[in-house]
Length: 190
Image (cartoon, rainbow, N blue to C red; front, side):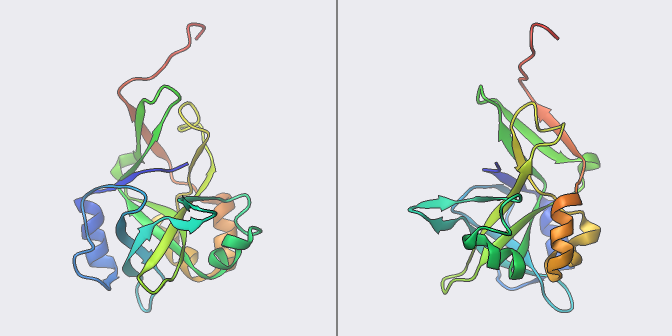
């Protein structure tokens, strides 16, 4: 699960240089939580487009913030979105909490930016998005069983513009992570 991520100045600089921004004032620094508006990268010509969207899609009386990669192609609520409305959430890091509520910060190795995979729906008042999650890898597994899918920067165009490539990327794309945690539970038997 991904319930919060963050953007720093490096993210804003990247968006300013690499994307056409369709809304003044959407660039921000700091933590991004469900229900908040933030820049989202979508397909555009000739370069990707950064547009403001709100994190979370209303469904079944609650706010849905994540979609599982294992079922996203079959679920009626997400099937059309994954085929036609893929997006990326530029981030400097994301956070997970272990069972004891200790926070871990997960960032790219060597401080590279993260591009979290998502899907969005267009609405009259602006788009809404969810982050696609996958089973946790060896870095995240000690603290949580799920994590966001990360798309390498070199494959941004393939993710945004081609459904067949997107399907392959969901199964193969990975960006190595660095985990920082002030408190980490250790087993007495290790």
